[in-house]
Image (tube, rainbow, N blue to C red; front, side, top):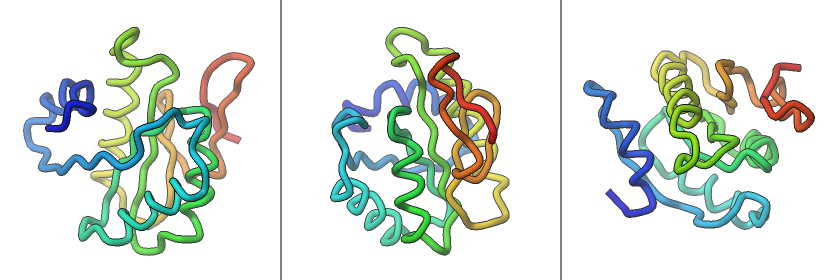
Length: 139
């Protein structure tokens, strides 16, 4: 497991029956991501043989990445999640969000780009980050 994935591994170790492969693609704050980074993510997803993909993403631009992927990914269920507070400060929020995302992804019967945050999962354009109260909500 790559060093950058230690927090994720700390969560995934409790998914005893889950087979997964972790890939580290972009190593920067989501505010610093651009469309070249998003294209790299799309290329990795499209070249993956897996049909169900979980992306751990910074919450500031998660919606931009999801929107970008919508026109580039057609045959997979892609779920984006993250945490408002870093794992090193609040391990519970990250664990809850990743667990929700994995549960949805494993049972996903449709292709599409989804966001899983704060107990909800929906197609990406129906979820937004309410910056005033600091949670993701449905439109």
